[in-house]
Every structure is written in structure tokens, then in C-alpha cells.
Image (spheres, rainbow, N blue to C red):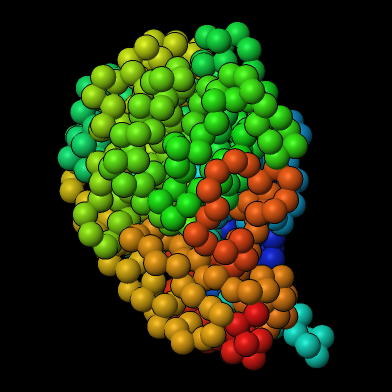
Length: 540
């Protein structure tokens, strides 16, 4: 039976959930298929009609439909978008969703990642290579495609929210004919096989060589679902090789999701304080973390997880002499350095330094993890891993045993996008956009006593130092502006047990973290509200 395209599907959006709106649509359609609400051949509402009904942009809907098309759920049929007619109905419970706290969601989203979701691993009738399609659960979640929700004002009334949390805005510039065409061509390819991964590895080899100074053959590069996927793979292989839980040094403050990966894989995360240039190898102790904010005399860390290109969240860049010192320390102590090169493409001030992996000319110490979530949005869930030669066989074998979580359709789409030159043009547009938005934030908050916008050479977020983080966050939320607090990124703040060894950070432990993916209009409105709050509070 044919249904009108204006079918009123039970699709709802929770703008206060912290989950991107586009990702909510993707998840709900998957669930409707799994529950049997949507049958093979059923049409979906037009993107225009659904956008009007839900009060969101049409681009958010088309981005969600593109993801589902790549997964094999949807096809374009005679001008309508339909559930794939050949898709075998699924008679089983709906996918389970791991519940996360708002703080966990914000931390995971801060660099484009999102909370995990269990989805159908392989729907009967879906073509090979499409089951593990790009999705939030595989790595960094879709760029926050317009997350916003009601906020309670002083009068108790609800109003619109400006969401300036990191990762809370869409990658609008990606909604282009070239990107959509790459996905359509990839989804329509009749025989992807290994050719999709082989092609993408070739493009990644060129990208790493030309942009990061890392020279590796295509078959020495692993395609991952993002930095977290790559890190858990490395820890799994290293832990098996050393036959014991690993001691993993992580930056403090740093990206909380990486610390959680360390702990979830059965290893011990050792927080180490950073300064304005990132982690300082001079303060790394040749000892064991005692668990009470002190180091016991024993073995050094087995692994160092660092963000030398753009420390997260404080934004410092590790200079070359410190990078060389760090490599020397790692070789002396038999440690592996895991370089999280998460947003190297977005540096817009000065020339980017070569990746730490480029300095590892012996290819024996550094694992470089990369992700495209900042440039393309987390819904793509694609990254890469370059490992020391001794680790590579184990990584390849383990990946072969476990299987890849990355859709061949997604790999082929990105390979086509890179091969056409559109990836480079899109990246340049994003750099210009983030540079303009950072200037907007700096100008809006300039001249307020006790407030400082931390200088950064690039990236998709800004850090604003304030004297009373909790008060500012509460006032901002009360007035309809959502931002993240800097304390969310600390394992423990200065002066608290567990703060880790090392020199004191040059940045305050109190501050705001703002994403730069919001629209210029939202940034202007949101920072105007923040300016009034900070001036009223006298910088507190």
C-alpha cells in the first residue's frame, strides 16, 4: 500500500537532551524499523515537510537521511525517500540505549563525540558493508545538528536556548552537492568490497604526508571509527603484549572520554598536569601512581596519551624541543606515546607543526590517532591510526579478528570526497569560519575585569577564564545560554587529591568552554548575554 508523503511519523526531538537533533532522527528511524513500525518500501516525509513540522532546518533532516541512506536503511525512489524495499523486517526488540548523564554527554560531545548507542549490527537484507555505517556509537558522534532546548528564566517561564557547548552546532558548510553526491555514489556502488578501504587508505597516506609530515604506505594505516576506537584498539594490543594492566598517563585537564576509554579497557589512568605548552616530560615521574595524588617509586607509565598539536581543552601547542624531549623520555622508559591529532586541519594562526609521529623517524614510539569529526561532523565516524612498526602486526590482526566498525559506504564516500579535492576546499572554509567566530567571541568578551579569552592557534572551541565558574554557568543557563564548564575536564583540580604530578597549569581551573560550531547569529546572541552576566558579576 502506498502512503502519502505527509505521513505523520512518531518522530520527536528533545532539544535539552544534549544529543544532536540529526542523530536523534537517525536513531529514531532505526528504532522504528527495528520495532516494525516502518516496513520495507514505506515512504518517509519529505525533508521540507518534516523540517517544518519539527521546527528544524531542512539541512538537519537531509543530513540524517544521508546517513541512513549510507547505512542501507533508505533509498531514493521516484522522487520519494523510502525504507529500502529489499530490507527484511526485523522481529526483535528495539536497540538498547545506554543512558548517560548530561555531564557525560557534554564531555563526549566536546570534541564532536557522542554517547554510544547499540543499533542493529547487521540488518537482514542490507547489502554487505553497510551494516556498520557511520554513526555516533562508532566514534565521535554526529556534529551537534542544532541541539537546543527550553531554559527556565528568573520568572519561571521557558524560552529558547542558545547552545554554545562544544560540538553543539552543525557543520553547515558540509551540506553541499559534492558531499551529498559522494554519499549517493558510494551508496549506489554495486561492489565496494575491499576497494573502498584500499582507496581511502591511499588518500589518507597522501593526506598524512602532505599535511602532517607522516610518511606511511597505505597498507600501514588503519581506518578507525575515530580517536576513541583507535585508542581502545591500541590499549587492547599493548595490554595483551605486556600481559598485565597498563599504566596510562593522561593530560589533566584533558578530554574525559579518553580517560574513560583507558578505564573501560581495564587499565589505570594516571592524570598528569599540563602547562601552557601541554604535557611537560620533565615532570613525568619514573614511578607508579599511588592513587592518592602521589607517585610511588616503581615502574613508569607504559603509555602517554597527549594532544601536542592543540592541547584539549586549554589549546596550547607543544614546541619542537619538548616533543623531542618527550620522545626521548618514552624511549628511555620503554613507553608508547599516543598522539591524539584530533583537529590538526583547523589551525588558522601560523603554520602547523609536524605531527609528533613525523618526528618518530624510527617509527618505534608514536601512535598517531586522527579524526575527521571536527571537519566533517561526528556522524561520519571516521578516523585513522598510524602505529609504530612493532605494533602494526598485532593491530592488523586484532582488527581483522574483531572486524571493522566503519561502513565501507562511508569509507568510499570519504575517499570520493577527498579524491575530488572537495575535502581540501571544505577544510579551508571551516578554518576561515572558525577564525571569524573566534574573533567574534574575543571581541564580545574583551575588556571585562577578571575575564580572559585564552589565546589559541586554531580549533573549534574557545576557553574563557572566569573567577566563579559555577555562578556564571548557573546565570547563563537561567538566561537561556548553555556553555560548558572548564572543571568538567579536570580529573581533579589544583589542590585536590588526584590532581596529578607536574607543573601548575598556566590557565585557571575555573572557566567556560564555548563551541565555535554555532551560527554567527547564535554566537552573537549568546556572547552578548555572557558579556552582560560577566560585567554584572564583575568578572566572577
